[in-house]
Image (tube, rainbow, N blue to C red):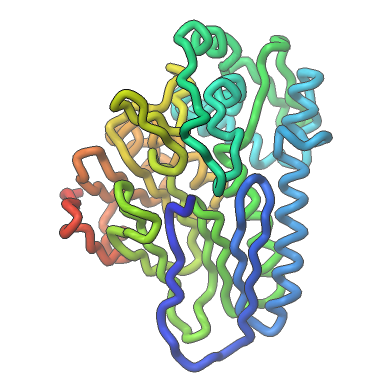
Length: 339
């Protein structure tokens, strides 16, 4: 489900060729748009980069780094060394709110057993407490040993397995974006729903408009519009994949420390950064941590953030965010709080 939506905005004079395509990989649809003389070629380059990323980081793909690690307890992670180092650093700085060894829990809850378009809440079962407890015994990022010189990733405990779903979309966007920028484009956008990156400008020379979704509304409802360029916008929310059972909302953002959907008092966290993989990692970690600890983590990394809590209060990390955001959530009961 899309968390943030690109609005085309503006209808000024066309300044460059505009091409777009939808590419399905990593269990989601990537909308790719390019503006410039080599627009079509750049989209094909982006497509190739996206498929390569899936082959490198999807635990379901034979030969990927996670798949090799899960099979042998060791893997050469040189293909994704930067991603691996960043993921482990955020795991460390968040005290495990982000944890790449969460796969046993992901399999247990089965939120990722469906494609984003065919998620069926009626087929998801709340695991028994004992099953959660058993899965938690194999979740611990600190058991991973990564050698930054050889890029070898190892673990002595064969029950520990890994996945990089929390950073996967962002990483793929970063790779595709790099290939597109090398084509000398006027501007472009890659939209993977919960992660979006834009660079340059639209055909009319203006910045891109990215809507901040209403976490309790429909896909088309939003509470503000960000006017941005050369930024990645990563969002984690409790409405992407969820079901309600006996009055309790169960969503796909699992707290690796409890084994259950994060109960942090938040509905949504949006991170604005220059690195989409980092933005993905931080949006997940900050959501799990909650407002105070999450805001501190975002500031530690020098990124801007927007937190929406369950009381419909919207918290901005710094004044620069308000300069980018046209807020319109008042009529839906949202209120922006002081910094």
